[in-house]
Amino acid sequence: MIFLASMLIDLDHLLANPIFDSNRCSINFHPLHTYYAAGIYVIGLFFRKTHILAFALLFHLLTDFIDCYL
Image 1 (cartoon, rainbow, N blue to C red):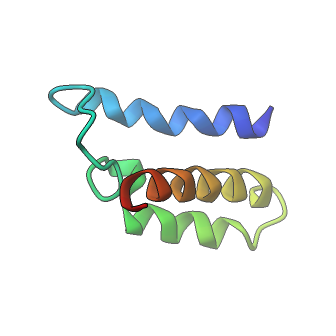
Image 2: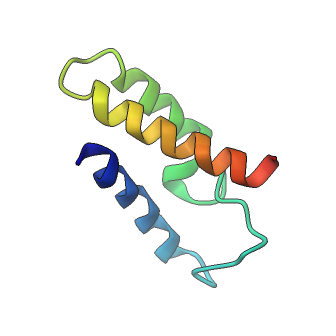
């Protein structure tokens, strides 16, 4: 359930114009997909209450990174 909830990170795509662009990389374009946000997610790994969610969010960013650059 937590990994499914981590998909809510994609709500920041609603801030973009156009909302969907097949040629756009979401890494460093959307606010919750930036390296700064990833840093906050890494910090979340060290707290017992947030470590699973932080791992799920980092996994989400990893899959987006793979989609963009590989």
